[in-house]
Length: 581
Image (cartoon, rainbow, N blue to C red; front, side):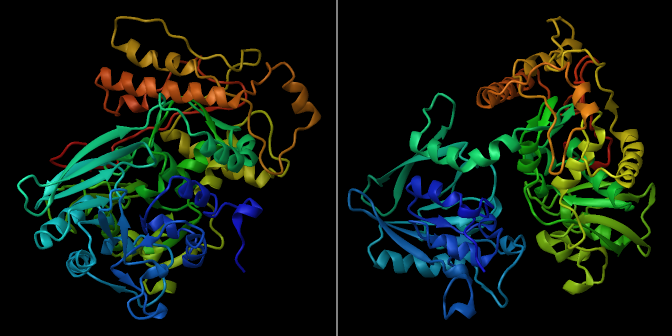
């Protein structure tokens, strides 16, 4: 039975429909995250959209001859205000299919370039003066498409799937990708070639979405309505970090990250595995989380996926093959790049894909290709997605044995919340059993050898107090100034009450001397965002590139009295040979 999540509050994509419709979209290419909740839910929501969804080169025979996946359209014809007809073709890459959680059987994939070469002439016969490929492909595959189609087939390729802004011209075709998450847009003006020949000249202007641009009030009202029920819960602090957490795509998808190390270590220790591999695409924050309060929404935004952690038994060779797959597309910003725990390895990007890894160690010893290891990973990966076919479990046609299956695994976001709850010194779950306390106590003993914690501030210290370093002329002052930049963006620092949480009378009394918690979440959030922007500019101005400064701990007086502060680190688990790390 299908449930409209806009009615029941369980947002499974329904909340995006009114927002997308409000932007007056003319057409959209199907993307992998449009299918996060399955084909049936996508088709249900697509019918509510006021624009067509396109994908021309993935056909589903079960829907009929030549019918695209999800009952999308292959092409659409638009008419501009001046009467010029514009034909659109939706194209996706073959690798795109490997990222999907659930697909109908027996899909037929067609070459993107061959499909464009077939459909573009048909559109021109129907009167299209401009033909545009709207794609969901990585930059190299869009470039391949531009090289392979006959001259005059396409005028523009508007690409997605990468999280970057880029514009280039190949084979007289403009290739444009306009960023992600509405952070950037592009304004295009097309003019016929002045010599009277075929083809068009395009002027392309990048437009960044900045705070000086007024918010659209109807859209703001829609967003407020959708988020109001969740806002109070999501704004609650869950923990405290005393070192910046680097979750940028340009870090986690290219090299070792302290965020990746921290989460992988938690996964491994929570399940008592020997090692852990997490595809970097798991980390969706794409930002640096500065020292200070970590809220529920930070965890949910950074780890939104609903496939659980699992544990499998697989060979050393399978793990090496998984690492090879992870670095096979380097330096592309692919989500398959591995973040690891219990594993150390080096890779040489100058070597062919499949033979780049070397010096692989697991659990502190050189890898034994024949030995069976307990590996913790995501359920997504043990189904062979993103090319991790070496980790396929027996149920999906592989050879790896399932130890903790998807029915018994926890979401990463839940593991993180439980860990931060275990650090608290005030307020516990009423269901926090002694066994759970013992479990997380053991996890902390091992985890904090790598990622140390700062003890809570002494009772009586102001809970909202942050380090206010004075300006100095030494290099050390650059790091010490960090808390002062963040300190002006104060938000609620009262710990979150999790489901089932309660305070005993003693705990309530112990907290009675704490100052009142500010409630102006929107203003506090605005200040926090501003502080993060200032920090990014400051990092660029001082020439800091992320490591090791990204993992610097802050001063001793930076903290709160209700929890310990976590300081995740990098430690050389992943080394790039012959390239920039």
